[in-house]
Length: 247
Image 1 (cartoon, helix red, strand yellow):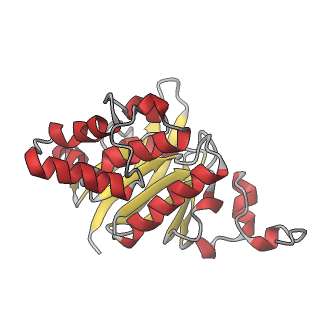
Image 2 (cartoon, one colour):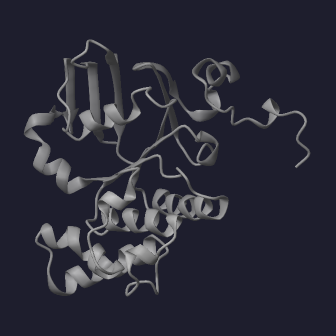
């Protein structure tokens, strides 16, 4: 598999001297489904800001497809889609269809190709039949799927989702899981930032856990010992962690 991202000794210091990321090294290949887990403040979103060139390292380096990040920003904008936790900030259109056309139109996609990009994004995000709906009338889960569809309409090679299950009820969370399952089957590179790892634990090929800006675990999910979840304040996803359960 081709390597997409590489962090080499990445460090980030905030202006007040607080450590955001500390000597962090990892790489992510095309086609992987990676969970980046950690409590709030662990450094998940900060790491992704470095991956897409929105933050500058205090030390170390970020590479995209083997080249320094500074030279790769146009390619990243084309190949990497980012679904922010605040989905409202990613909705621009007066209708679902208008919103989905916004991103690809800005990339220069026009005519039949634009129409097909919108139709495909509606299908992939399970929003068929909603093209004329006003985004303000959508439920929380539908808005999250609209934000995902807006990214998919630009045909990215990699999709990064920041806390995709935040503030969603169970049925809405399941709809997001269905979308992620389908994208995984298509071979998309998926990076999911979440502290709710139990929702995508069985789907992921890899689990990365951050704690106070440090990398503390990086391996296939089932190789994670129960102790690492306790130590980092995450919910243990294993059935054996809850012996009283009868379901």
